[in-house]
Length: 331
Ligand code: GYE
Image (cartoon, rainbow, N blue to C red; front, side, top):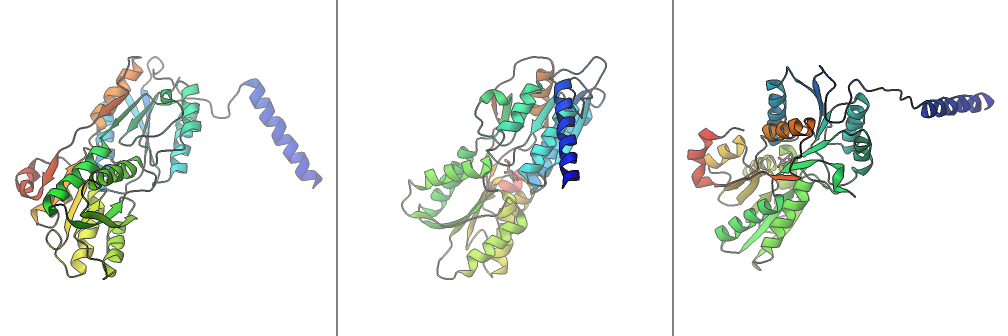
């Protein structure tokens, strides 16, 4: 007991000493704050969500590729959070301790970022948000957001489906990761549009975490309920739609005909499924954000202003256009 107390006392005094001397256990390797020290490379820390979908893999490759093009001047520190916010926060804290110049963050969920972003701000490290937005107490906690308009994507999916079904359909929804901007906003856009069509309803809705295997699993469970007839699937991303297609086939039905399938992203696999007649429509969401992200990195490092929001445009592709478009797809 006494020994333990003495130990605690020793730890407390050491911490106090460190706090008073202003000395941090992990002192920065570079100056932080946008600009690299003279003769040093610009150090960029990229906290990626994970590798849950082919969209995300394409985004990772795009950002890594842009860093590689600048390898004489730029060093990229990459961290994969396996879809866990705690891991992203840890990665950001490590970047801050290492004194990186700029942080790129693809935030898994919308909320809970205030404390760590305040730490970055105290050290003058600008934060670039890519692909998903966040809610913060003060917008100056990040420099810019480079992302698509998710509400518009959801709305387009619903409009397309309403037109295709003459405004009458039982829809099942496969949601993205709970709390993620892309899931919340796509659902909102879809639901708001659906509300204009009294003959269309979402009869089942569940989270498939933006993953193919989970999309399949959830769709299998939906199909087991023989009492409700499913006319269409709305998946928050292509990977879950591809999983749902497998489940529909396993249940002895024809995807794209017996059950319509519409999703978002526009990845290669979705185009292949459209060519095969199994997916009906996808709304493109461009993951090739490396060039825009590094444009912002360079401006911030040079002390120049950046746009608070850069909206990445996307196009709707129907099955009928897939054959012509597939050759030109970059991801
Ligand atoms: O649609 C999905 C991914 O945040 C926009 O995340 C992104 C989404 C994308 O896993 O496939």
